[in-house]
Amino acid sequence: MDNHTYNYPSDCTPLTSCKSARKPAGSTVVNMGTAGKKPPSDYLVWSLCNTLYVNFCCLGFMALIYSIKARDQKTQGNLQLAQECSDKAKWYNILAAGWNLLVPLLVVVLLVLLLVHLGTSQGSFDFFGEDGFQSFMKLFSSVH
Image (cartoon, rainbow, N blue to C red):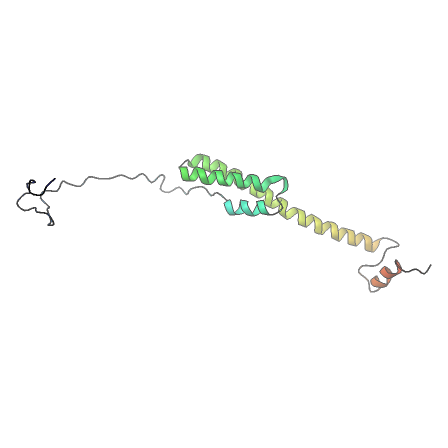
């Protein structure tokens, strides 16, 4: 459109304030979802740590899969499915973390029990006494 053919109101010219020719502003509504509700957590970092550590029966890997699904659903706006995947990821992480703590604890307990048993049984060397090294060396001596 050419500026010469357009008729401006007398008080409205280009590059000036033209308040009389403006239409009243309408309202715009932006839906931001539920304002007070916090989106579900995806537990991605926790799942990644459980996947890289022991990962018994692929519990950490399952947690990682559900964490990624929860993040995907959250970005797509499906908060209900995101919450379900988030809950599953949390429980798989709890199971994997429990197993990751249980295995080293069991190894330490079994090692202590083994040392106590070997220290108290007859014919063995004394792990906890002062002559433990001498008793140990007697096992390998060639004197009969």
